[in-house]
Image 1 (cartoon, rainbow, N blue to C red):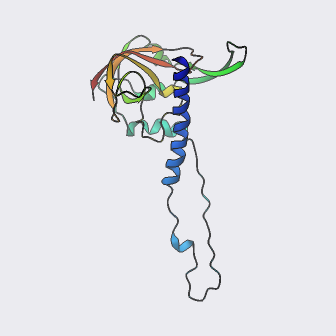
Image 2: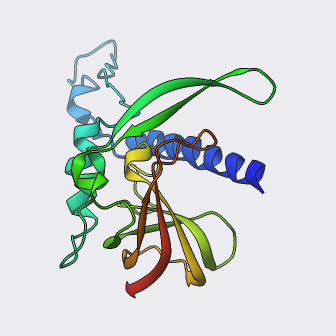
Image 3: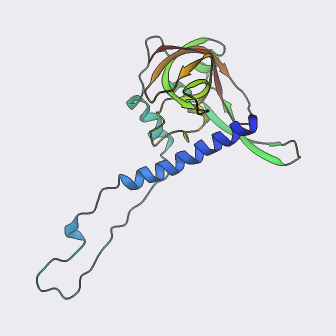
Length: 204
């Protein structure tokens, strides 16, 4: 189960990168046709000039955080995802079971989050399913929808594991949930920073 989850997370990560690359290609502005071909009557050579384009695969952290408000709102009495974005990712190395040197990141939480460890919180976000079924008991939760080009290579500061005692139906729309926030100071397997326990849906 753990190995399958690791593979699934890696597939989602690289799938997100490929999805963003395709998205960037499809949304490039087409060049003005008048700039491509010399259409004068007396020409003897047709010259095609392709404009240089720069394709940026990964958005900057500032762009990602600035775009959160386009996808989710902060429920009354709820937490803002921007608070989570302030968690720093600290690289570290550790030795695996076979003696191989492995690398991960661990969180450095801001004081605002440290005070909420173990507290019941209210948040709006999107489900990222980890199984093929419609009902999900364990899923990823974040501020961007599955169809968004930013998903889910935003880094662990903006993704949390969510656990529900009852299956929650997956959808592409934002949902508001209530749960108990658990800060994870170190997770060698997936570099998870947060878990949301005992999740219940407040509104869909």
